[in-house]
Length: 49
Image (cartoon, rainbow, N blue to C red):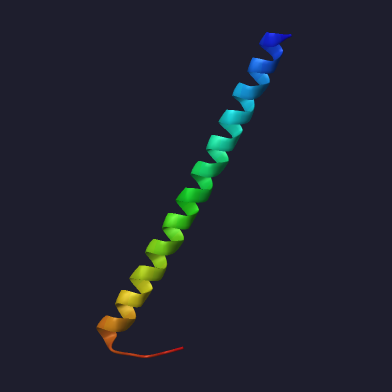
């Protein structure tokens, strides 16, 4: 019984960590792209909104 619970908890932790890792990776990628776009706009001197 305890073994089943520990395996279930371990599986849940792995799934959560993978999901969190993917979410953090996408968030960082999105922020880096926005920052790069903002830098490109500043360098070209164009104000487009």
